[in-house]
Length: 165
DNA sequence: GCCAACGTTGGC
DNA sequence: GCCAACGTTGGC
Image (cartoon, rainbow, N blue to C red; front, side):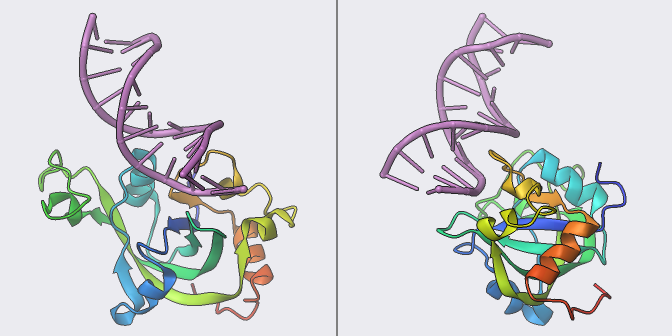
């Protein structure tokens, strides 16, 4: 399904890691670590490539919203936090020889001029069936179609965004 | 804070 | 391999 997908939506709880936290990283680059769901893991490991676009979504807050844009700068590689006993994402089953969990590196690009709340997204016929709006959806990394990507940027006030993402 | 939906675990 | 119990996610 995700074959040839170039665009993704990634969820993060802003109290844990917000788009501003990403922006404040050196060069705006951070590993997207700590994903512990096999479906999302498969996307991180197999599908998501450097150069892909990312919609940054703030979840689990009063007004969840797509708040900005990032790009993938490094494709999937083993998530080292799974090997760190001090990490809350430590998984003793994962080894260097046979890593279980993967991550990608993402780089901050821009905040949306206007963040798009769930209500905002539902206003638009082509966005109302985004996976993130589906009831019970828990996938923290999910594919986004090119049409959805373009619409999110446009409705978010980003029409002038460089297309070299 | 509530709770529905979902993914994972583990007994059998 | 089934499935009930449990833990987590995440909107509301």
